[in-house]
Length: 236
Image (tube, rainbow, N blue to C red; front, side, top):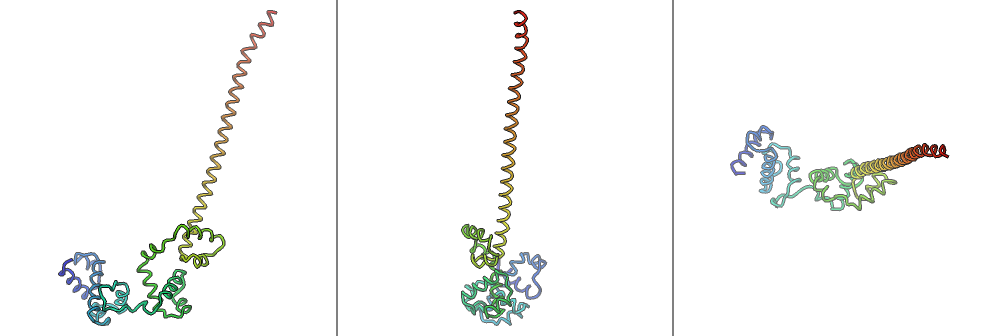
């Protein structure tokens, strides 16, 4: 993207809202407009401008500006200090993540752990922004699945989640798949049993037909012998 296009985007987003119509007017996609806007915000903050001043310039709520900071990779902007998660230890962050995976509310987590709602919300927002990455990094292994399946018979999803370190939603998905697999196995066993019964019936019918065929042949032979026997008797 040229500097002229970038400057034009920054100029227009300060005058109007970001919409598909604006993207069509500028000849760029909407996600690219947001990318340019966010980079402009971070550049101004890195140069020392206040968050409030940047929010007013871009006609944004200050919370949205902080959200941009929270989601951004600040390696290129060393002068910006992230305000979120710095107040929680890594152990606290992991505990909050586990509680969120168990579908606890923000207030419940805040009361149980004795931390501010805002910090819990920051962890939740970070989790949502990295949802795809988290799923890739915490993919359930075959060994975990096997153990979870065994525990499903006598553990609730909550207890199973606490033991395995996997979210309750994942436990429920695995339980549903387990039931589907069991259902398919039962259907396969029934199908196999039915096929064996039909095969046995076919073999029995084939045997009966063969025996009937042999009896018919014997009867025909017997009938052929009877006239000859009568003729020999008459001669005698």
